[in-house]
Length: 252
Ligand code: CAA
Image (cartoon, rainbow, N blue to C red; front, top):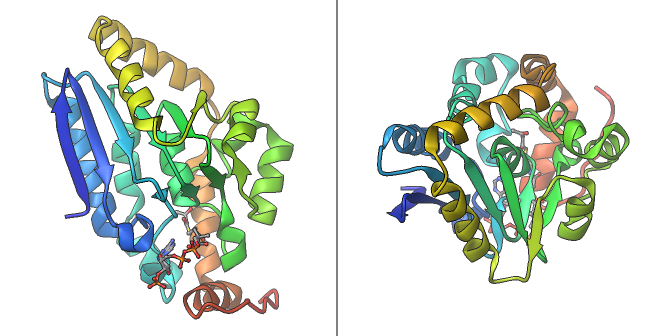
């Protein structure tokens, strides 16, 4: 079990739980997560969903061990993006409470939510470039909408993370709270929204997403991401991460 859930006051709390790998998003975890969120979306006792990790990490990205040896064909056959699509179809508001690292797929998962609340020491980044690939779940499509093209370029092309304060200034995060208070703040916000008329809330969410995400082309990003699994630099980048050594990239 990679996910823990509780419900109170019409708010569902969903916690990622693979602490030994900083909540890396394995295929199994993503399947469980999509299933739980889909269940809560149908549950009449739930009006808002809060998604969180632990103090060290919201999530440090897709599970590199699972991807290190994959070919493009293998990546297509895994159909991992079906899970992401299911999460993007959730009609009820999703609030991400982020402490620690939100990197790669972890940041993309936070951006798949509707509102991000961050702890002061949280770090946000798209480090895929450092392991020979690129973001595959919204980092090149949704991030530029939130932070602007230049900043998204800088983050995706250098892999360097930004602080919670900078993320707030850029509009990626809606509020920053002292460490230790992030989940409480997210739950309070969730309860405030849960007290509003559910149909109006869901229709407003749908309308805002349609406007904010117009023109986003996730399929294009997925093709480029998948193609890179045919490169030597992807093999080298991921092997180097797992062997805890610097990579040697050649452009092949
Ligand atoms: N996948 C698999 N395992 C991971 C992981 C990941 N994304 N991130 C961390 N881990 C594992 C580490 O291998 C390590 O395992 P061991 O104890 O067995 O060695 C454990 O979690 C703890 O990590 P570190 O020892 O590295 O912890 P640290 O505090 O020194 O560093 C960190 C933390 C900077 C977040 C570092 O772990 C890191 O850089 N992680 C990878 C981040 C990354 O590249 N994410 C992008 C993945 S690709 C992606 O997400 C594609 C997409 O768009 C869908």
